[in-house]
Image 1 (cartoon, one colour):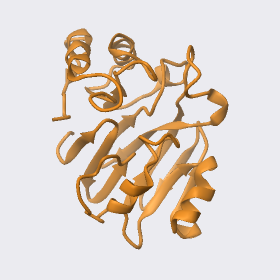
Image 2 (tube, helix red, strand yellow):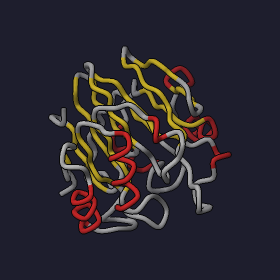
Image 3 (tube, one colour):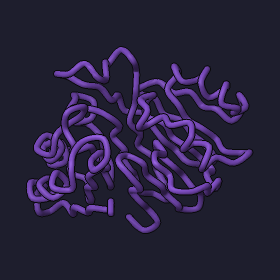
Length: 210
């Protein structure tokens, strides 16, 4: 289930399974211009980075963004018919790929207010459900997520820390858990390692970030 999946940096993810998909491209090292689809969780600079989007987009790339980012991506040069705006708790289809949105917000901090309607995504590819949590704490909504692979933030400060992330994983019980959101803006690889120690032994934990 993790073949052809990379955690590039921080929360930047690349999936290459029939379609080339990027989630929150950030600190991309060169111009690849190979994205079929780009998913953006919210508009903070380490998730919506226009210079990094420019390095992965091509002429027919579809970009998926929360509603508030529509003006920015239009200004960036995306055509209206290549933009999908999303709201939380909805289901969508893009190029034959089903995905749904999960609210992503803080419950005890002010960095990611619920009213902003920022999201994580559950993307279904070839029968496997991948949950990319976005910047979030534990919420009533994400405790109900059904997925095979969960990529969750562990860095703390702006999101769950490694203990909270492990609690969420043990609650939703994916087959595989992957820690993200560390090593750049906040958090270190130790957070990922400590997270892996708290995940239930029946759940495989993979640290993909180099």
